Image: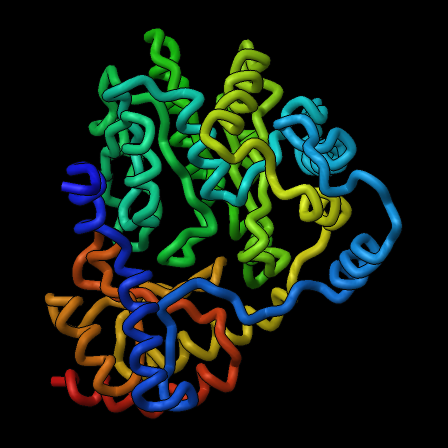
Length: 393
């Protein structure tokens, strides 16, 4: 066999998200793009803030020497200083540029973090439903993913998490605002999680929280985002500017390591080394210089909230059971039939593309990514109504 047995196996379990996206491309060629309502991929149509575009134009047109050269593997010092200042202001913790490692998006950052802390067979707990790539990232570095169900409202079930912890548990991945449900975890449940992990620490077991915060600025209705740095000391935040600055194709993000972590210098050195040996070397130079200046900025959240409200209202009027998202740009309704793959195939007959819940470890649901134009969401209304009527008793 030309390719490895492991990759052959992993490819069979590969992302439903990409599979549905590719199906959407086929259907667009067949029926015309204007006749397909594609909610499969979280690929935002929102444009970056105008100030960011202007700064990018200024940077690339300036006659500055050396802006495309190598820099330290952790990233430009002045950029990390800007990010550390932003985090220090948010948390009142003593962040410095040493606590920041610039990465190739959140995906690169998560791989760097996992590479830095995992030994073979170490376990990483992941609440379910979950972003399916987490499984591959964990296995990339010899780890074992342990899924744990969330409550019916998709919030954390601390009791189930406690039962899932073993002597091999090294970390838990928290993703809030959450993909695929749009849930934002409450401060209370995060404090309960921290209390549980503190109990484990007293027995000599140290468990990290890896907090994937790619959507942390996309939150609705004035909800306050609980800052894990202020809740649990062994926290590593991984984030990107793919969503908040609408730069998914530029692959720029960072890791922030809590200054409260004991012996954090060792962890920082490990992350910098992992960033190098995983082949990333460093995050893209131009994008590093650009995003450092825009830590306080984001795309228009009000526009996303309008889209959230529109798709939610369409689903409710069509008879779907759905938890209203409080952040990100996904909604995760219950499928009207047990077989969510069969239901998603039925939706395709109505020219609507969604991702079955099984692709996120949660059969019986489906995910819609509403980061499309508002008129596309409005245009899908009659088709959702048709599908809802078809399955209505």
